[in-house]
Length: 48
Image 1 (tube, one colour):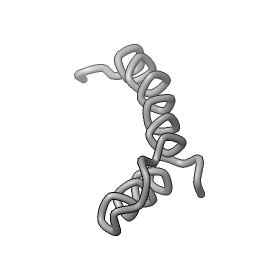
Image 2 (cartoon, one colour; image 1 turned 180 degrees about the vertical axis):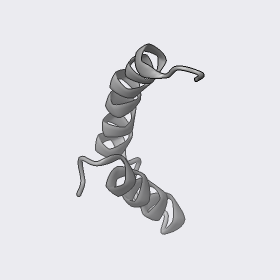
Image 3 (cartoon, helix red, strand yellow; image 1 turned 120 degrees about the horizontal axis):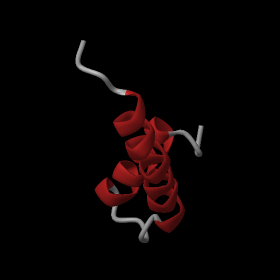
Image 4 (cartoon, one colour; image 1 turned 135 degrees about the vertical axis):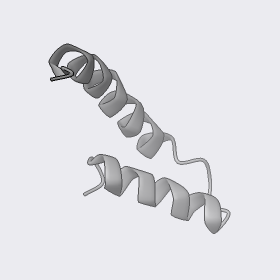
């Protein structure tokens, strides 16, 4: 679950909440999902 968007986001938020070190891995996972998901959504989404 660490490499899914929801898992990475929840781990990053938990790290921020409890004052743990910067969650670089989780933020890189979220950025990767964004880099893949945004162009894919722009390509496939249609108003119809």
